[in-house]
Structures are given as structure tokens and as C-alpha cells.
Length: 182
Image (cartoon, rainbow, N blue to C red; front, side, top):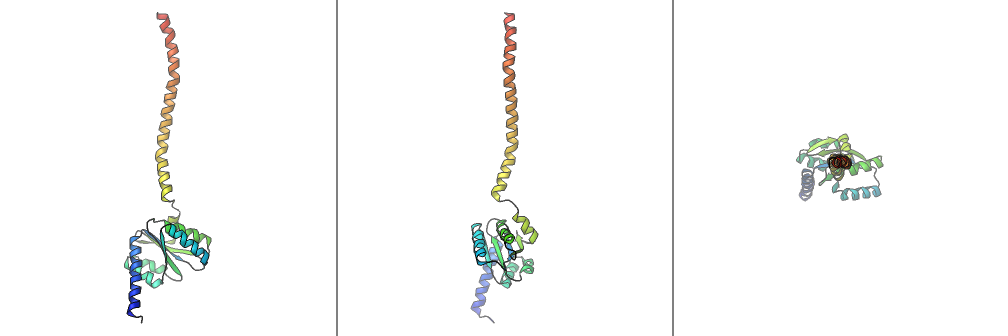
């Protein structure tokens, strides 16, 4: 049986992971078997740049942390060589980065994830990964708002241009009538 100090260390690690899970919008569990050190280093760097914490921990400890925050269904995916990527701010960042590596490395596999406190399957994680970034979505929204305004502006300009062409003709037609009356 482990000593009391070791148990306390493990409980502190589990409590820290549980706190991270509780405070994050989303995360992804992967099977990292077969990834090279070079690819793992690049992936971890990409995850850090995206604001994602990537942790390799014993499955039993990850399972306990999941139980503490109500993600007990996640334990069914915790077998073999697993790691968890926890998004700190962006809900789709872990899925995006890990999907990129799962496509490059045949043995690296996305197993499941969680979103807003609910466990989601692999297909949902892959769907999340395909969602455009926040900046792209904002640009699309602004473009869709701006498009009808441009259409209105062009239509109004066409009316102004048409009236502008008709005005000189009306002035020349009115001028001969004024001359005959005088």
C-alpha cells in the first residue's frame, strides 16, 4: 500500500485535473500510441499556442478527476495510452489541433471529448474540429450584414444616376417651351 504522502500527492494531482476540467469549456481524450517524439513536441507546441493544456496521466487518476466533475461516462474511453487536452478558453481549439495530428499519424486517435460538462463521442469532436475559427465566423457574420447594405447602396446610386440623366433632358425640353411663350 502506498504511503500517506504519495496518496496525498496523487489526490492533489487529481484535484488539480478536476479543477481544470471543471473550468474548461471543452476537452479531448486521445490515444497517443505510436506518435514520435518529434511529432509529439510539435503537437504540444501547437496546443500551447492554441491555449490548450495537454496532460498524460494514469487512466485511473484521469477517471477519478472525471468522476469528481460529473464526466464519469468518460472513463469508458480511458484504456491504453491516453492523454487529455483541455481547452482553457476556446471550445474548438483542442479538437482542431488534435484532428490535424490524427490525420497525419495513423496510430494517433481521437477517442472522445467533453463539451460544456457533457461527454461527447469521437464524431462530435471531429465535427467541432471542422467549425471555422471565431475570427472567420465573425468575418462571415459581418460580411452577411454588410452585403444587403451594399445592395441597397448600389440600388440607390442607380436611382440617383437615372434621375441625374433624366434631369438634363427635362431641362432642354422645358427650355424651348419657355422660348415660345416669351
